[in-house]
Image (cartoon, rainbow, N blue to C red):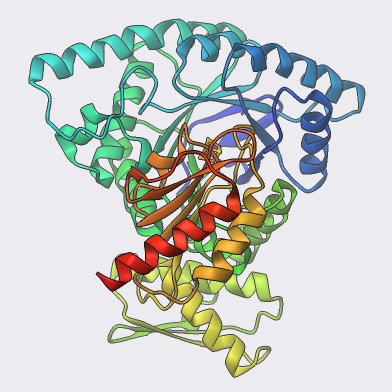
Length: 451
Ligand code: SF4
């Protein structure tokens, strides 16, 4: 059952009985008006029904106004724009009258993340919570006056120390962080809110979203839910992760808007997202059978991506209810080798069985200053085939290290084409050229495998 509340974001209805809204995010430098406007146009043509743009500072606020003007001239002015704001409530307040929705991250709105997991005293905790509530009030008032919605966007990788100190780095912590904001907005009588619970781990994202959904029902809250798997990467693997996490929740009737995040051109995201939504209709219950801990799924779907979506969603949905250990797909339209490869990709996506290196790569955004798509391809080429290894490839040093906290090693974008290498949470290089970073990464991984 979908969330009950429905409202409009720009001219697009969300929640209630509205269709699932497909959205995506630009990866241009927001200050480059022409590039940003033309990418938004291409994304709209590719099926994006809302577009998010990063707004790191006040400079981008005015640029976004110009981008809107440019879109109106070219006939794409109707597409709702969402400002993505981290760390800076003043930027969120300034951009709120210009856009249709502001995404804030409760993990960095007023709280800090220094990776300290020490629990605060009750007094310290309440003081920090009150500081956040009073800092949220002006933004909420501006959004109310301008008909702007807010997305409370929780990321598993960027929970603040206050929350992690009390709840650990867990799905429960994500829910607690979201509920604080929902209670604040409710106390101020503001209801145009969308909530998301994202993680690069499909199972964490699903568990957190299901928990939040249940917690909201208990509290009689009915805010629409945005679904997405962060840092899903690219290619078939990236698509499978998104299809598994988003698709499994959609099969349970949870979710009002989705973003498939790929480390590719953002124009590639909406067509796959639409395919995911439409492919989940008419799955015949008799085609899904669980025997012990093995899931059997027979399908006649002949489009590979649609079949991938259906199989990944069905598998992840079943795994979240009764733990699976293996998967047997059958489909007369594909060869044995294709079926076996797809089974492995889906099992890896759902973390049921790992047969390859786990790549965690962000989709990039206006904060990225290097060619992340090429670097991800090179990293995959050089470091595939290690089931016990997780490697992150992240666009920026602002959010990247936190968001890939699950990874054993990583490459993170610095400034002007340079990147830094990480071993766990520790940065082990200054900003260096990509070639040198790949060599250092290889040496570090070899050393650690020998240990
Ligand atoms: S980690 Fe990637 S998507 Fe997130 S803010 Fe940085 S560049 Fe953008």
